[in-house]
Length: 133
Image (cartoon, rainbow, N blue to C red):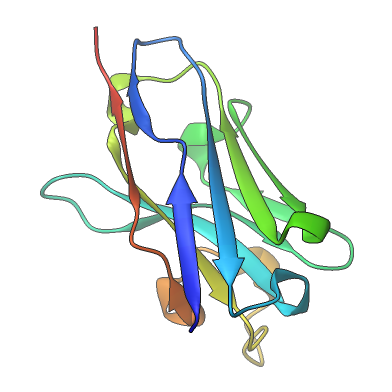
């Protein structure tokens, strides 16, 4: 059974940190072209937060998290992480991880298309992150 399980969410004060984990079963994350993190806040559309490519581990970040969030992967543990620092109330959302086993669409390089949710094939159920004092 294919499954992605996110963990590490919770309630944190502004300025605090959390590390999210995404662990796969029935999948080998090292075989995925890319693994991404997305988030969805109440009343808002799902947005791409970050994604990391296999091989050179190139990573993309949405502007609002650059310099604060870091994505990494540990293929030996079949896990991808999202280290989140200097958290802000606007980071409050359900965070999802997702895999892209297909790779880039012709004419749409990964570097400029990583945030498109339609690229991703398997999704986890999400973990809630709440930033509040």
